[in-house]
Image: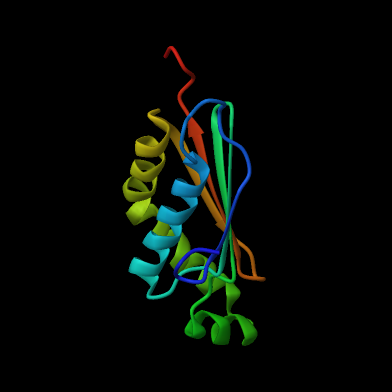
Length: 128
């Protein structure tokens, strides 16, 4: 658990990195969510393996999004979040690029009705 009360789980990073790349990524992605949504997720898990970084975020909805989802308006919540993710994609990619030292080739983002989100970063293969 970090100082903001967010449960950060880091799973795997390349050997010998000397620092927790995945913890840094999870923390920074949570920070961006909190900064731009007004609240961040309560749980975050980052996985870094080969050319892929995955961040799973839980309990991400704002109170307004929870109300809309409970009222059967999840499609609107998803649409709004997707528009937001498209706009801030460079900020999210920058976090991963700084932490890994590798360029992001593709970014994919998804949210479920249960308030779980995935942020997936496909990195350029080393040597490209």
